[in-house]
Amino acid sequence: MKHESVWMATSQRRAGRSIPGDLSVDVCVVGAGIAGLTAAYQLAVAGRTVAVLDDGAIGAGMTQMTSAHLSYAIDDFYFELEKLHGLEGIRLAAQSHRAAIDRIEAIAAAEGIDCDFSRVDGYLFLAEGDETGTLEKELDAVNRAGIADAYMAEKAPFGRAIRYPRCGQFHPLRYLYGLADAIERRGGAVYTGAHVDSIEGTEVRAGNVKVRCRDVVVATNVPVNDRFALHTKQAPYMTYIVGLRVPRGAIPSLLAWDTGDPYHYIRIAPCEDDDVLIVGGEDHKSGQADDQPARYARLEAWTRARFPMAGEVVLQWGGQVMETIDYLAFSGRNPGDEHVYVHTGDSGMGLTHGTLGAMLIADLITGTPNPWAALYDPGRKPARAVSEFLSENLNVARQYAKHFGGGEVSAPHEILPGEGALMRRGAHQIAVYRDPSGDYVERSAVCPHLGCVVQWNRTEKTWDCPCHGSRFDAQGTVINGPANRDLDAAAERRKQPRAA
Ligand code: FES
Image 1: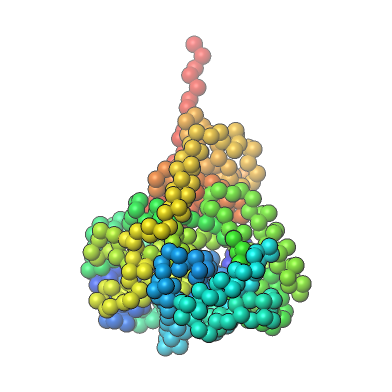
Image 2: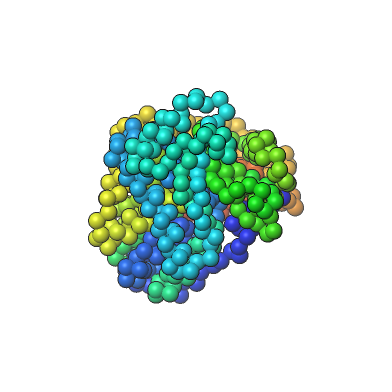
């Protein structure tokens, strides 16, 4: 069994160009995931010169970890969304998510991108133990949102379910590679291995290189330009996925979700000569659980109980989801900036949110009116989501107490090879990783964003910050913002005074 996503297993990792030196362009996009590349593509089509910068490969952040559902079935439910955003809000949410799927289909067709895009139906079915009225309540709200073609299917694949026609699925990495090619064909450029150190106004710095531009788009999953404001309105959650081999065609192509919290999500993807049944769920707040093997085991058991034809588990992987306090992404002008735009808060619908956010930001930059602007405005103050705001920020406040806790081990040799653990050294919490050969890597366990203590993730082999979504690999190298630098060196052991 491999620990990687089905998209990584079925495509070659792709880098962009190396950045040649200082640049001057109309728009600099930071982040080569779905939102960044779609924004760059939209702007290149509109005649702007664009440069995309990313420190990793194309799509190598959270886009490659998605389960790749293209859905307009809001995963926090339309009836809940309506309480926060009203009737007009749910209508615009439905319209924008459907438009995102249409846009992906149109781009793939226009640019000849071989990404297995297809239309499939989605099904929302009752989770075990959920009250039976949930589906009826949701269908009423879905219809009020203007989705007239959704209906209750009495004999859906999982029993009674709301059927959402014309959702979609594709191979997200192959789509991004095609987008990158299309950007380059229009004179834009995608630079990888280019870590952005700072964004000052409209000057972006990556090492010694300066990129000057009229507008900046920050699409780094979690923004690296904003230290505080947006991070109080969203919270990071880890989600886990298993991929089980099934004979080709044994399960029809579909998307499905149950009504649980956290919920399960299902789709099928081709892999070699078979299909892979992809099932995800078991979410938890990032950096606040250490039982990942048990979570994968529960996902497998849940899957086998419903799909007796499923074979071996061939893949498993985890990804991080940014849940906003009012269930919708933040896309638009960065609060307080005239020419800096931001997209974040995928809320479990990263591919449609990333695409619609990119369409919206491109419209804002080109001065094209867009009816979704207020709904997704990063500066919005969701007064009706105040209890969610308080609960997430109290949770963050509690994380600071970990500075004063004992370590998980008292000496490095207590850590098994391939594992990590926190160890107290005087006043400091140290993140210690023991590599498979038995060597130790020690780093400060204090997240360089705003100082929370990171936690070891046993299956992803990462240090995850429980506060705002920063993640670091086993060696302490930053792989996800808002932190924009690696974990610091560990505090040295204090020398023992010599005996007199
Ligand atoms: Fe904010 Fe770690 S992500 S303190």
